[in-house]
Amino acid sequence: MLTAEPLSPMLGAKITGIDLRNFVDGPDGQIHEIQSLVARYKVLRFRGQQLEAGDLVQLAGRFGPVRALRRPNSGGVVHIPEHPQIKVVSNVSRDGAVLGDGDSSELSWHTDGSYLLTPTALTFLYGRKAPTRRPPKTSFMDLQAVYESLPKALADFILPLKAIHYSVFAYAPEYAEEIRSLPEGADRRHIGPTHPLVRRDHATGRPSLFPPRQRECLIEGLSAEESEKLSNVLWSVIERYPGYWGDSIEPGDLMLFDNRFSLHRREPFDALEERILWHVTTDGERPQ
Image (tube, rainbow, N blue to C red):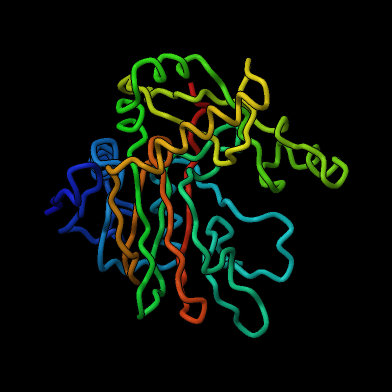
């Protein structure tokens, strides 16, 4: 029997009594139950799962169209050829080839794919290998709660504003050619989708902070200097916000989280220790 145990007072739930292999082609009611838990807790942790690559892709596909967020032009990098929907995240090389995207450095607070016209909805992180010595924590934060914690004057000020979610690299296919055509060193902050700084949950109408990953972003109606100042204020709030939860992702752990209304980050770890994750996302909707 499926049970949910809160992981913290802020967000997250440990889900037990479930073998996710049975959800790959199970009844829709089971999927709806998990969707309800994601909406309630933002982050679900399933431990001790035994998923093959095809199982993970099929499982994610029950929640929406699957999208792989890989680095572009990554020559010599190997993911899983039979399952291109999966992005391998690792700091590992095998037989002279780099396994997937990533390294052992810190990943600061961010959402996945905000540089897309339709940012991803759900993210699935499945642990394959973890460092044995001081494995890094992956932490999560509720952006709806962060917005509700803002001083009213600041919350009201940013409510109508929109920001350009540009990418340092040509990740978004809609903008890749335009980015590549820029001369070296050119300002690319104007290239990317424009999303509201405060997006709403379509189901509940609850507002959520939605900051661009790149802090030097441009905000409509503000100068570049004003945009940077406001962005720094919002990121200062996020970095000081105490209401987050995190833990290491061990082999067999599946983290399923709502990427629309949460942030996540990862601690750095010893580059000599190997860490491998499988990363899959589902398509979302245009933020409103």
